[in-house]
Image 1 (cartoon, one colour):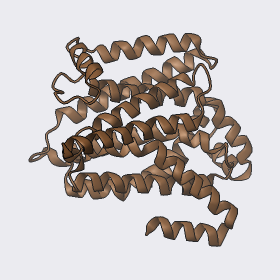
Image 2 (cartoon, helix red, strand yellow):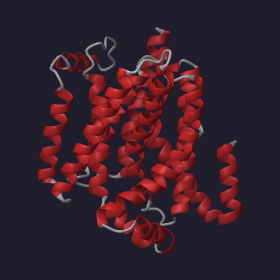
Image 3 (cartoon, one colour):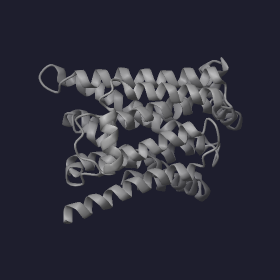
Length: 317
């Protein structure tokens, strides 16, 4: 209902052309982030019903206005050493110039998001406690590698160092941005893992997991914000389109939790993490050569659909 109301409001106030763009952007966001919904569901399951509701209310406000409006402005501001107020003014007075500046920090955003998502996927596949495998011949070997302490961190650093040497973007900026993504993942993973969801810790743990989910959303979405400027320079249309997609994805996440879908479809989480690995590789590959957005979206969608099919087949068998 919320999405339909938003579509109707856009069509009435901004016209048919704007409505078409909003629909395209919404579909783009859903396609790129469906795997995010599956991963989020595993984290959201650990949160209390109160924090689950806040994920859909407070979280969507952070997703729309924070990740898709405020954060890009702050990144551009820091990159060009300009006042955030000046960059905000550009958003409304000269969106073409803002889009050009945002594209100029593409390397930083890609390195940050790519390394963060790479760590999310590697942490899952190197988990020594993981006993159920989807692509068995690969995943069982990855679990064995997980007995090597901090191997995912070592691999991420080696890959980031190599890409910072090969990239066409500023090498120091790419390296620093990737390291920020790596350190942020380690900190958030450490906080989330150290807190229990019982007694006095429940509010703190819920808040920590809430922050973790929104950082994960940012890692998924920032590259999509830059890609959206290929369709339109109107940030309001971009926010509405991506915001509708983000709300839909978060609704799917809550549905997966409440229906206990991840327990019934046992390979769905595997497929989502393979999709995240594919997205991370595509983002990091963009540091050296251009990877079309449609390829990035199809990678995730194909892995999730194949995992869904495998899960249903196993359940019937």
